[in-house]
Length: 310
Image 1 (tube, rainbow, N blue to C red):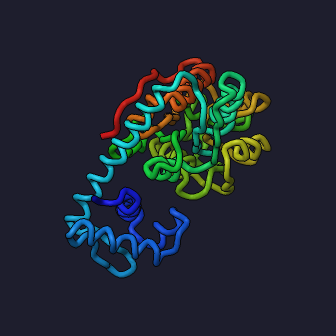
Image 2: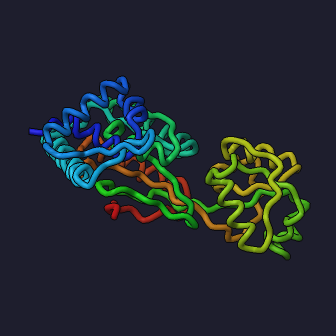
Image 3: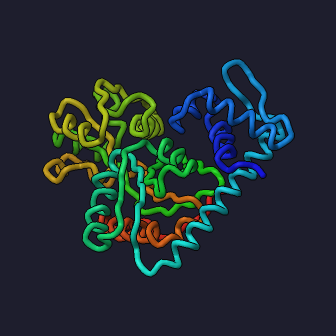
């Protein structure tokens, strides 16, 4: 019989591509990973791996086994949820990973609510970007991922995951109040020659700004790059640069800088779990809390409901 722990290493390798990356994820040595993969190959009775430089790729047999490993993991999740559902109370531990603005918007209020309503449930939260959170989720290191994706890019989910849209958050333009009249007349193009502040290169906010500006015919002149939408708002408040940010990141004192009635797109904030785990009472309690908090965050929250990834 194939060993589940070794099969999980195969799953890691299919995801990461190198033994060193697998070792780092599992907090063991590279030699230990290589040894366990060799044993798995012997157990399977087939050649599972081929080396291409520093990358250890999967043969056709390895790909077939990796796909079955994903199904095994899903079945284990379903079994764990079925056992958990037999409990008569919510108790235990749930691990959550969230992108930066997902912490103050959803994760922190959820923890506060869980502490009051479900005192026997321990919730552990870590900050990760959306891609990293999904990787941790696929590997079973967390139970819930709070992610965001911009409407111009879409979200790619691996099989075995389900997602629930919690919030449809619009993007808003922050600009000097002196510029508002000409922006209302000329739209975003009125700022074509002005300076901008945005996130790091190739970040979600950077891509959103470029997409919005290029759609009306110009490339934004980004003179300042900061980590975190709230920091971007603070710099925009000095009047030295305009900014495109998610609506919930704008502090109340700065809302007079928002140019109203501009359609600049938006992003979807979602909760993602492994298929089957949504029925675990602990995970279900966290999802209910996130759903309730999201509903109060904006006047028009996204419709609830889990949908499976293709």
